[in-house]
Image (cartoon, rainbow, N blue to C red; front, side):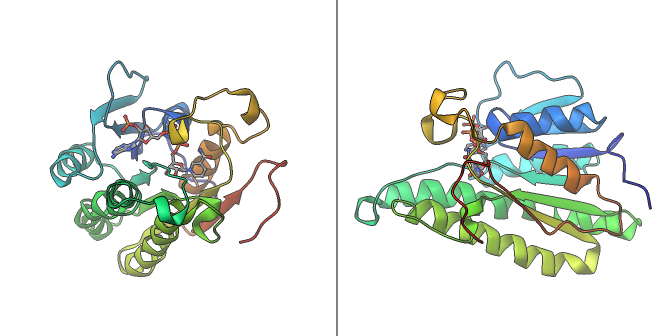
Length: 237
Ligand SMILES: NC(=O)c1ccc[n+]([C@@H]2O[C@H](COP(=O)([O-])OP(=O)(O)OC[C@H]3O[C@@H](n4cnc5c(N)ncnc54)[C@H](OP(=O)(O)O)[C@@H]3O)[C@@H](O)[C@H]2O)c1
């Protein structure tokens, strides 16, 4: 079977304003897909083939509005990419910071996905498949000093991803986890293009993995893609 084309398909992407999400929007529209992108601040964002809506993945009402537009556009895929980082020792994790990270990375994935499940089930009833791609991290399966909160959120996001894959079997949902190592973005209140990130992955590298998963032929489910910059220390899983 030939590769499934993205032309004419609609994909919803969270965290679409910057970094990896922005590159995903550009890669998907470049392949002919229509994209609905969301982020808390979408001021001034334009991209041929894409429309942007304000979206806070931690806010159920905001997620419902985004999902309603995704349904109107006939979205057949969702990319859960919105995420935040926090890197301090265990004793410095505050309840507020815990909630910010867990709400964005875990609850956000749950709410946004949940808001589209009935739509995906209706698509299945019409003979159409659907896909969810979750951008987690290479640290969704290992941790490091100062990484407790962030990696706890990514372990949890991975668990949600796997549970969804089990559940989605009954309605033809294909679920993919994308696990990048270090990527040169704005992550963790840094700037893109800083000198120390010169050898890291580019957002476009991760976007290509998303394109790969979404353009896989219908009989093929890409469960997971783990990718690292060559310079990053080898560590599994
Ligand atoms: N950079 C890395 O090294 C790396 C490595 C592995 C995995 N990741 C993962 O990749 C994903 C994207 O990160 P990035 O590196 O591209 O970071 P980034 O450059 O900081 O971009 C994060 C994106 O998420 C959006 N966002 C944050 N909170 C949100 C919320 N509550 N609701 C909706 N959108 C929200 C941001 O827009 P607004 O602030 O306007 O909402 C922005 O568009 C994250 O899940 C991250 O954990 C990153």
